[in-house]
Length: 193
Image 1 (cartoon, rainbow, N blue to C red):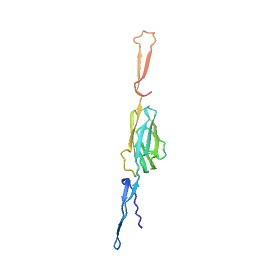
Image 2 (cartoon, rainbow, N blue to C red):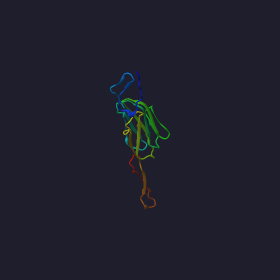
Image 3 (cartoon, one colour):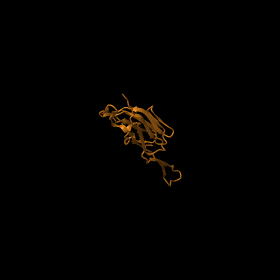
Image 4 (cartoon, rainbow, N blue to C red):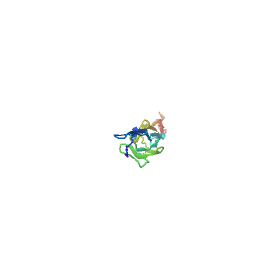
């Protein structure tokens, strides 16, 4: 007997059919019926959501969910996410780290079929950062063929204050009258001061 082995790849997803035949010089030939092996492949999907509208100096939170929607286990599962600048970010999963350039990377290893991983990334947004913070995450697996659904974008909107002040007084006044100034502080921004 002869045993033939091969490592499958993402290109083998679905069924692999193989027929063996033998020919001898003194006994003719024989062919086996086709043997069909089903190769179950993963399909990673990712979603990313922000915690809506916040004020500057509040905490921005992105929730990332990585799911294996395929029939096979996903191997070598990784995540990459260049986070917005000028904010000190943290992540709640030990398989992840954030470097000095705010690049979030994760190495999850194997993600079984039907399983998912949720991570949260958070950071206090300074007053110098205002407006929409769009952020895109990408996931990958070493044995995945369909990568069309491996990215997602989340949004946190940072509302900043815009402080103004005016000073008024009655004028003219007579000598001996009390001089009064009225100071009015206003916030014309979308955020709470």
